[in-house]
Length: 104
Image 1 (cartoon, rainbow, N blue to C red):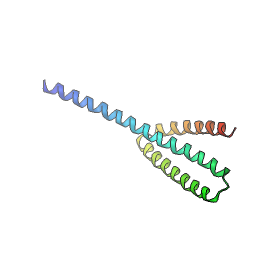
Image 2 (cartoon, rainbow, N blue to C red):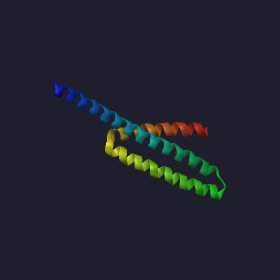
Image 3 (tube, helix red, strand yellow):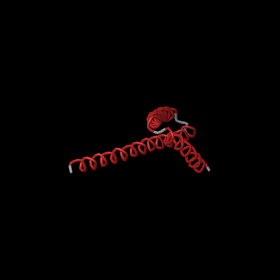
Image 4 (spheres, rainbow, N blue to C red):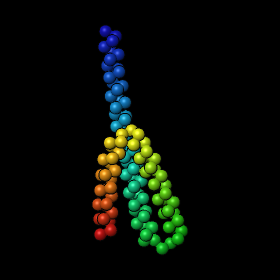
């Protein structure tokens, strides 16, 4: 029956689309997490640095991190606002735990 094969193909492509969508959400979350943590460590180094040239490099790096974070955040907000909300809460907690440990 040709209809049966068509249904299987459609079902298969829907599964691929769903997986791809999930992968996109994970990639956006990873981009946000990476840029956030990189920004935080750069901020710590900035505070400890006395070298003006290094501080300038760190400011540029932090601006780039912030830009990457906002780009990923904007895309995630469109894709899944609920995921964004829970992820940002988790990220803030994780960042605070990591940075507190680093500073201890």
